[in-house]
Image (cartoon, rainbow, N blue to C red):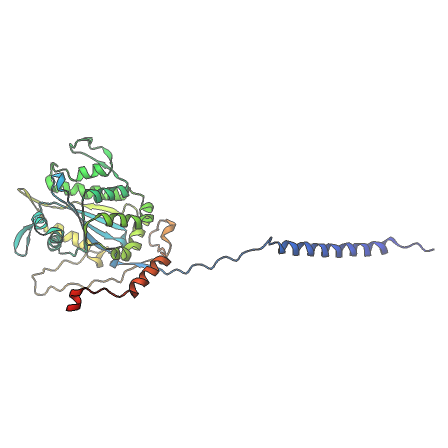
Length: 370
């Protein structure tokens, strides 16, 4: 009987084992996939975003008035100029005893305010500076301290003899009550001029020392809290909606955004007369939009009494386009642009807006008769 070769047995055996492994492995893989293991989910489609533009149209000017008769102190006036395109907020303290030649007669800030309230004060400052003030906010004790609490107080150098403060020029932390006491102190050596200067400087320090990202993240709630406390203001929710993207970006991506301006002028007895050159320089540097960001000097302000004086057209061509989410908190480099996504309205707010549009306007009996 012939002896079989071992190779003829090994080859079929190996082929059988190989086929068995394929069958078993395929079955195992099928069970593995059937049970849901190893599945990969496709990444979600990116949310479409529309870039928003920050322009000179976002600049705004607000006259802030602190009126606390119980403090036995004259009202406090601070002019705030917000320039989001430059990430800058300018505070100008206005002495209450300011006088100026307006409409051919000498008029005062305090007398205008006492006679006609906040609107009269706005009109007076507009005529003195030759600018447009967009809105005003009149604070009482409660609303003013709420603003201070939102920003978190301030560390400020105090060199005045006020009860509860160190009179040595050292930096001292002030809470909202102490800030209120400081800005309404009526015994500054420099009188109302120094009080106005200190008030503007303290506000600038408080803004610069605050956590910008925290302020930006909570800005919606902060605005609602303040606007509900301020009883007399022309600022509306529409104003906030139109400018909030620019304001949030300024706080989150800016650095030391606030500056205070020391008003220049002459003390005339108990009154203060601002300098014409000071007014002109302020207007050119902070209120002439086409000059903001330009290294060249601003054009001279034409004499309103001149027959040939023609107001220059405002050039709003310069824009700072935002191309990155402000939630990222990444500081901007020089010349870099960032993107800001449009905030999609919630379903609840969208439904409320649609209902408001569909609802017919109510007519009063008087309107019907007319």
